[in-house]
Image (cartoon, rainbow, N blue to C red; front, side, top):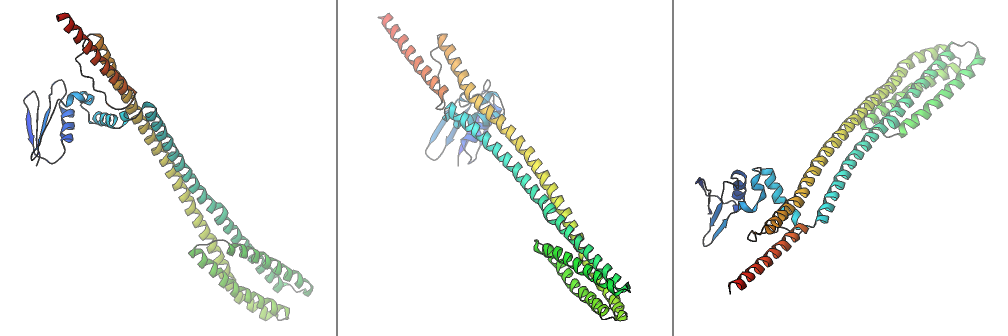
Length: 349
């Protein structure tokens, strides 16, 4: 069990027994005890070790802010950014922004592609199926009209004209039917197509019976068979209308999906742009502070040295150019101090 105690100059103290790391307690001290009023000492007693860390807050600029966000920025800056050169930091930041931009653009393209696919289903499938089904309805209506004309016509010489119309519109129906059946269909669509096929077989057989009876000169039987065929024809036409209604419903569903994909794409773009702006602002803050904070420290050190103060401790952090400058200034301060001490020794002899 660790024994951790924290004291400050106001004589406020608390005693914590916890297995968490000393770093967590250090962050609490930085946040709530300003440097101008606080001196922090942390002691960790283990079985046979005693580690004392004093004046911790004096080494952390974030203590002035009293803000956990600035503490996090300082930790990230000192332990990550300052380990890299300035050109490496800038390159990594630009690469991150480019990556975010590509992700946003990719999400937008994905939404557009998904929307286009839904619209293609509407235009290239549903609308075509509706048109073919409508052509089949019209062809059937023309066949029925030709058969009715055949039954009402008394002039035998006109029969061939009606029979040619029947054959022509049957061919029109068959072309539309073949094109419709060749297109992809869902399970429910397949069931409707099967119903059309079955009702067509029944109705066409009855219509052919009417034509054959009329050709044989048995008009009474032909009219009787036509009455029987009307119910089958109505069922046939009804199954085709069901297919049209189904395709219209499927088209509406595809359009709703396209609208949903459009809204999702818009939301992705908005969220992505917001995230990109936040990350850009964070990177700008971190990189700016990683440059300005060490430079301000270097300026302060230079001012102290220019004023004759060679006792201030210079502590470079990181491996970047600003840290190299601080190391050079620390080296210069040590040499100046050594030179002045040597001159003092000579003057006392």
